[in-house]
Image (tube, rainbow, N blue to C red; front, side, top):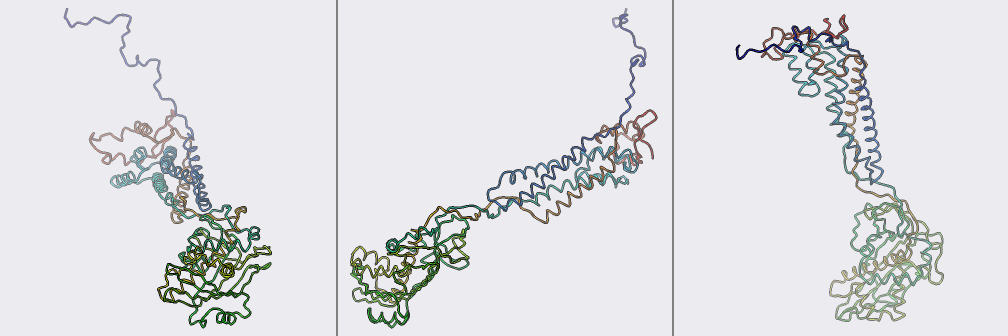
Length: 563
């Protein structure tokens, strides 16, 4: 017996002599496919259309809300950006999901089915979803000399639109920083008529003189409470000739009550006044007949280390009476000051004219420190009988006259303060320069008699509506890109609706994929008959054959029916 001789198998293991015996009792026929709607892609498309609608509504709402408030909630800033990102990520994919579904239904009709077998493969590889795939497909179709079906062209166009839409939509609603005005309620330290009525003349003068002797301008002391006229090239340096005194609105815009002062003090050119007393009194009477107030000569000694002396006399068209009679809101005044300053052998003298318009009323205050729309309104309804609130120019001049009477002006302390305030600490300069500096100091004193009233009459117990302005980052609308985005979305929706109505029918598979292509090709082996194994796709002339449509065979199988 040979070493390689094999024994027969045991008797209990049956021998199989034919393939039929292996498959005995097993039916290898595929079950008859059932047609169905496979509606999941359609449901996804409906949800996606709802998503797009919510996105567009949210963007429009964000644009509208962005101009109404400074502080934007997250669902008007962050959420739209997230939804746009999701839209960009999913628009092409969800569109392709529905397109592959209706492409299967399109096989059942010769009117909508592919025009060649080559198109079957192009539909299956989904190259039509991107620009590069579309170009390569068109190039292959040209080289193979086959026409693409209308269905394929619409699918490619839908994907092109879906690719472009997110880019255009993001440009239609860009994020930008804008200046926004927002209505708020504030409690500023505004003028209070009731408190103003409690301010007496002595308190007004004492408070005003105290700040005047600092020789600092009102715009430096009341930085956030002095508002200058809007639209004028008015500098905040020095003492303005027109200002509105009110509470600090902290960068907001509001209409508040306050005090307004207009006017100036300037040196009179070629003044006829040569001395105090008779000459100056006659001059005042000529300028203002029956002028109610002319002071006695005022002497201030010891204004500098060289013992400079200043002699003044003042007059004005106001008296010791309430500045605003009942129902009045505007008080006008004019006054004159004659001065003569001596230091060693230097003498400076001249006449200064002051005019002022003092008003109560309301004005619109702006965040840049300006005011507009001033409206005179009576605020002072009553005053102290024995010490009424005084006209600001008269209050300053009365102080000098009363100080002379009480010998206050002879005090070394006051002399030092007056020298600081009047700017006469160094008289060795031209007379016109000294006169201008004294005029500036006098107008500063008038201004401080106004600010003293405002300081003593303020209250923050009343609320006022205001407008706050600030920079915020919001979605804005670019009309050009918005129209383009809506046109693309409308075209996309119309084409998707057209394909759905045209081809959404019961079919045998939910998606046009490579497995479906294999099922179609396996029943048509002639597509690759007599083709060299190394030949490429475009070299297969059989793929140019007409596809036809799919239908059922006599056994119920899904087969390709030749047209």
